[in-house]
Length: 117
Image (tube, rainbow, N blue to C red):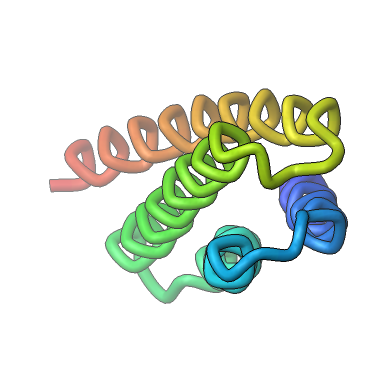
């Protein structure tokens, strides 16, 4: 999953490099770069969590950043700021698949935590 997240972040970086240059795209580009890389970095931190609660927290943060990334890309797409719409569609599809994976991870981790009690 970590490799897939790295590839997703790299894909978003490439997408941002091809955005039309406007004041709006400048703001959205910076926000998109931060949130998309934060997904990967928070997931990497979760792998070294000291406890199951910390793992759940870090994965939850990564999931939140993924949702922010997806909505940001949707705004960019709807505003017509992306030059490569096919690349955008691929990234949006990947964000949906990653969201499903994070949902499953969180469900399993929370169930495991409950079983421990």
